[in-house]
Amino acid sequence: MTTTAEIINKEQLLRHWQGHRFLTRRVIEAFPEKDFFEFTIGGMRPFSSLASELLSIGVPALKSITSGKVSPYTEEGFDLKTKEEYLQKWDKDTEEINQLWAQIPEEDFEKTFNLFGQYEFPIINNVLYFIDNEVHHRGQGYVYLRALGIEPPFFWERW
Image 1 (cartoon, rainbow, N blue to C red):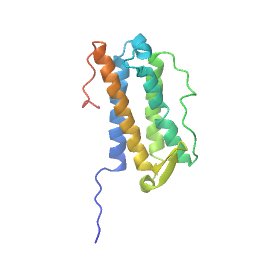
Image 2 (cartoon, rainbow, N blue to C red):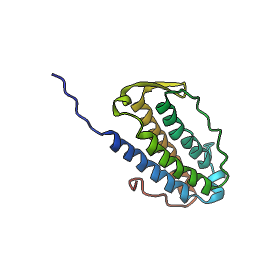
Image 3 (cartoon, rainbow, N blue to C red):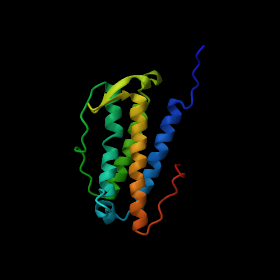
């Protein structure tokens, strides 16, 4: 007889992801305006570019998943020029993620979906990638902030 144990449910996973998003938002806030767009180390992209990537994944991916329509990945489509515009877009996307998340039946997370026409994995794996990618890029932001002499937020303070 095989039994399965639920380790984390759909709502807990969303709360976990949104906790990471809250922390990434705090990292964006910590950057001085100019450095958010210009500061780099070792050939890495500025944090504004990393934030653009994250904004180009969350909502577009969930829209694709909920509609069943495969759309290519693109960072085009929004023209953000200030840190405040990034924060406003971040907040808007946070609410939209909550709305789109509610449209995904829990049983669909095991279904395969060809995200951005490139990543054919179960939806749960794609969601875990969204989180892993955000943590990775936020780590780059921490390095930038420390190099600028700015103490980043504690990584465990996700609410």
